[in-house]
Length: 398
Image (cartoon, rainbow, N blue to C red; front, side, top):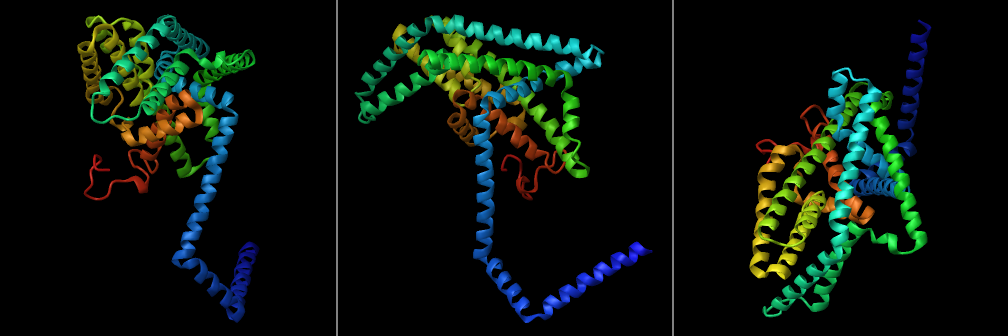
């Protein structure tokens, strides 16, 4: 009873204060002026501009913080990606009552062995023959320039040479990690950062595999009601998207490498194995990677076997890429993960500017995760309101 009267008294006092404020002509004028200043179109524009500036400042702060702590952030991201990729294996082991520690150790050993094998294959197949590969590619590029000089239009030699130098630097940095040769101190720092990041990634990956569901439930404790349901949907979509993307990309890259490698062997192009390995590695960079590997293979074929062989290599690359884009990717990765090429290009550009090659590799799966979360923001299969197709509009049109 006392509580009811107390609440009623507070409400009456608030009502009296509002009535006093509205009865004061000066207060009414100030309220009217404020509404007029911020209620018109220019005031709305100023408010939205201020909101955008705040969002951009916060985003810039997050990006700068992540770049500063890249030795920590990147291993955690990689551990999350690997844990999502192998989450079906862990779920299968848990369903068959395999002890959590044993299942985690087995999966972690499998991941380490897989990465070690891929790294050894790259070093063995590419690095020892990189000089020959680079030399033949440069000779092929020179032949293309000599032929192009016969055409009525062509960019200047300096521009073409700049494009070629940038392409060579891109591939050289990716394959040989030229930063190790910039000096003893820089090399020691790079090796230390790499080893530290690798150890941190393995440790974090162990706990993600072993206690991933428990860690996620702990992170969800502050949420209740609809925010909790939304966070659960976002987490499930993140794991599913990352896992599907990495498994699908690895399968597509393997098919690309095998298909193009077989074509190179049939056409008797030298250095077929290093070129196939480059195709596999660069296929993890959408749009750009496979194209660069195909150009490199065509240049080698041009020097070794002549123009006809180079044209046939280009045909093989185009055929494999068409089969990949029209058949393999929709089946292995699903339509939900298919981003518009413009989105992929922008993500690649931003990722490359922020973190170089590794940023280019991670940018697209992160963009796919963001798009996946938007698709389940308001419910299972119900995108956020701003991203829903309009009445009469299909998904393809959206």
